[in-house]
Amino acid sequence: MGVDHLVWLPVGVLAGALTQRVTGVGFALVSAPILVLVAGPFEGVLLANLLGMVVCVVVLARTWREVEWRRGLLLAVPALVVIPAGAWVARNVPGPPLLVLVGSLVLVALAIVHLTRRVEVGHGPAGAVAAGATSGFMNVTAGVGGPAMVLYATSTRWDHRRFVATFQLYSVLVNGASLTAKGGIGGLDARVVLVALAALAVGLLAGDLLSRRVSAERAGRAVLALAVLGALSTVVKGLLAI
Image (cartoon, rainbow, N blue to C red):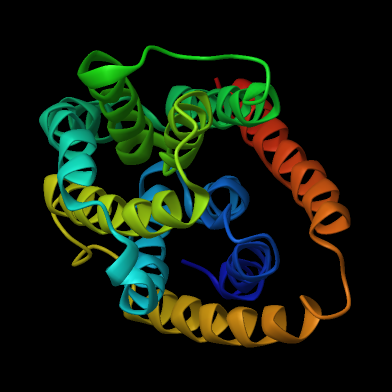
């Protein structure tokens, strides 16, 4: 990875970290398309999985008392089952088509987030299995497993605090499995990992200050615009390369 990538890489991480701290969700949704643009479809998603897991471990350490363990595992198991298939797609689809796939999945995820108040999915175990499997596939291929979980939580009227806590457990398991299925982080440049982790720490600290001055609604609109722009740019880059 060139020096220019090391310059632009923190932008995606900072944007995702700020989003996570100000709004409570959305790290991967914002950071993944930007990371894919600067690092490529495979490495970018791999890095998004790693950083997403780190963020969730931090949040889980604060919220573990609210975790609904049984429900979290019910969602995680189908996700873990489909992850090997998604990892195969990520490894074997050529770069340009994979860029189009990643960008398109992010756009679908954004549409899901936008429609969460209007659309309901199935309840009970069947709905949990469908949500988990969809989330797992999108996580390992595009780094954005959260929207399917948000849709499920909204349609089942899951208590927000318990959902947030349980989602951290789910994300740690799924991101860890995604990293393992794609061979771990050994292929990532050590400089990239260090720069990304430093940007993550700075972004979370800056987000703590920003959250006191910016409303969640205003931040949410900025997040949506940034995520759409990143996803569209990813699709366009892939189409031009094809």
